[in-house]
Amino acid sequence: MRTKNSFYNFLVSIISGFIIPILGFAKVRLFIDLYGSDINGLYLVFIHIINYINISEHAFSLAFRQLLYKPLADNDRSLIIKIFSGVRSIYQKIGALMLVVGFVVALIMPIFIESSLPTGVIIGLFLVLALPFGLSYFILPPSLLIIADQKEYRISIWIQLVAIIRMVLMIIVIMLKLPYVIIFVIEGLNVIVGNFVAYKIAIKNYPWLKVDKSIKTNADFMKNAKHTLIQRLAFLAINNTDSIIISRFINLTAVSVYGAYNYLIEATLRIVHSAITSPINSFGNLFNSDNEKSYRVFKEYYEFTLFFASVLSICIFVVLDQFVYIWMQQQSYILPLSISVIFALNVFYLTQREAIIIIRDANRLFIDAKKNAYLMTLVKILGSLLLVKALGITGILLATLITYYFIDLAYNPKLVFEKVFKVKPIEYYRVFFVKLVLAIFLSYTFYILYRSQAVFVTSSLLHFVISLVILGGSVVLILFIVYYVMFSSFRDLVKRGLKLLRLR
Image (cartoon, rainbow, N blue to C red):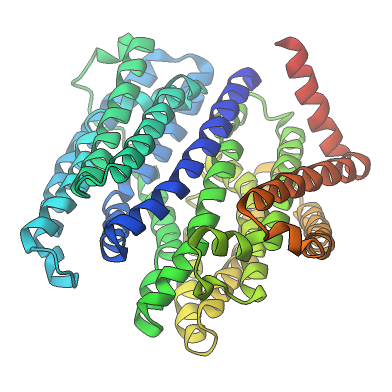
């Protein structure tokens, strides 16, 4: 595994992962204050719908990269060209289909959205966001190759720079009180510009991709894509139905409150997800070139994800409600402590889960996980519908918790350990529950200590920020000491990191 490339990917992910969400928090608050909740709601609805329309991008890109791991490890350029040529043809067809679907959805959008905006404005705003996603399919394939080759940092740094410029421009537009349509235009341009920059960099690194355009589609790609598409559909069903159910069974105010909490969680998870998944393509290469050390490397990597999961879940539990209140400045946004508890548990699971999912997908086991994806979707949606009436937002979150802790936890780790590592998953479950109990204990301890300083914490925004820094630093330090003393795999991980730093 080319550890140096993974380190660069990780570094770029961490830096951009912090900057973009911080700018995003400022942008959301300013956007609502100037343009109002209706425009903000319209913007969010459009983004969620486009996520469904754009479902092929994530699913097909994973299938493409998975096929490339072995030929990249073997430096088999002829096979790479064959796979790439077929995928490029498929992506062009998908892009054309996406453009047509975007136009159709835009035309029917006003029927389903209650807004004081004219029909033409709603259609135009949706097209401004949707069309760039369709156009991007025509230039995506080369950048997927550079990602599979563990050189993602070469394009990520530019894509993230474009995203940061996008946020800054949006904030400037809002502060100048310019028409909100400019925000939509900036969002669309971000997609086109970011993907075009990635395309130019990839072509520069792999100029030989321009040859042999006549090769037909690789059948393995379509087979993989079908199964990764199912996984992506399950992800969207689990994570993008909450607002719809809340609006139907509670009210739009509850959607706004839930959205504020969920925005913080999603922003946090994006930071960690970028950092944790940065070695995904390294694992793809590892399992196609060096199976002997794969289990040892996995154990170190899993300690890495568990450490992140514990830090995040502890901090989220301790400060979630206070953060949202200080951010939104409305008493109605304060929810019961049970909400923070469930959010923290879900964040812990989702973060540590990435280690298993990366190994699963690198070994094409997403094909075996198809039934689990169906079952998770069914349990999540039915659970939400059954619990929302009695428990409100808490019921929605409980349905998510049940889906992950009782369905997913019982399936994916077992699948990976038995089929990849050829061992029973008992060691995984032991480590998981030990770290979970440790995180719960430390969460309660830090909560008591933090809330004992409530007068200082809430006296001003500066004091709140100072308290967050102190809390985060303390959690990281205590967890690092505990993990290093108690867990040998974590010590191996630290030694690997120190060795990498010395080499640099």
